Image 1 (spheres, rainbow, N blue to C red):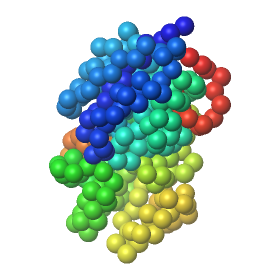
Image 2: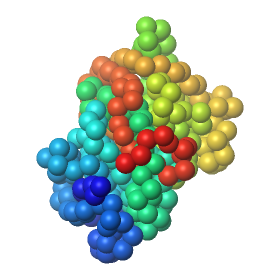
Image 3: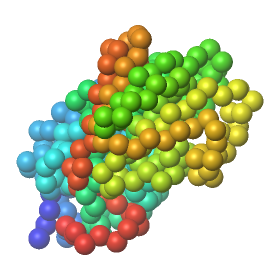
Amino acid sequence: MERKALFIINPISGGKKKDDVPELIKKYLDAAKFEAVVVCSDGPAHARQIAGEAANKFDLIVAVGGDGTINEVASAIVGTDTILGIIPYGSGNGLARFLDISMDAPKAIRALNTGHVEIIDSATLNGQPFFNMAGMGFDAHISEVFARRKKRGFFTYLVSSIEEFNKYKAESYHIEVDGNIYEREAFMLSFANSSQYGNNAHISPHASVQDGLLDICVIKQFPFWRLFEMGMRMLTKTTESTKYLEIIRGKHINIKRANPGPVHLDGEPHITGTHTEIKLVPNSLKVIVGDYKKSKVRI
């Protein structure tokens, strides 16, 4: 039975050209399985609007972009029977990498034909969905700085991080996780659904999108000269052995801090007040994965 698939392309994600994506879809998507429609978003929140209007008309909606594009599309279909597909074109591609979706567009498109579907957890921050990672502190500050830069891509993100590192100071946080109270001084807090930020930088190596828990990563202030070490620990999945990281796992998190400030949801910056509430939403999104694990669900 032929299914209807909508591809939503974010033209600016990751600073990568996507002019050839429609032709790649035509070439590698199985026309016997899918009737494909391709559209482009033209600004913030537009992908979410398109996906929301299409959710009841398409069996599969494919985000062509990075974690921010995935967030917009998935936010419109979370909790429904519509399936998410991903063709990674972002700066970090954290969720796609975690789900073993190929960074090669033709291979990612061919994976849609196979249709290995997993049902994964999502989460909300003050009611707004996220699927890979949310955070506050330094990484949220960098997301805000990065969003103002004209150039996109990993190198721009790296330069922004180095430039801002010594300017940013740790804050005090009152953290409540499933009723347990923690008072912490933190350089940043990351709320990890998957294990990684992107580019295979794993902040919480044992995090899982299917365990019904979020990993609250409390990163303490560390000296600049340890920045390379921390980066290598993330790339080698050894962050849990450093004294600068504490991981607390839970489902319902309340954070209080002295002043309002930035947060990020899947890399996209927002401003929140002094109180932030994060909730896990288990088994809430259907997504086509790569070799993440063999699925019993097929489309």
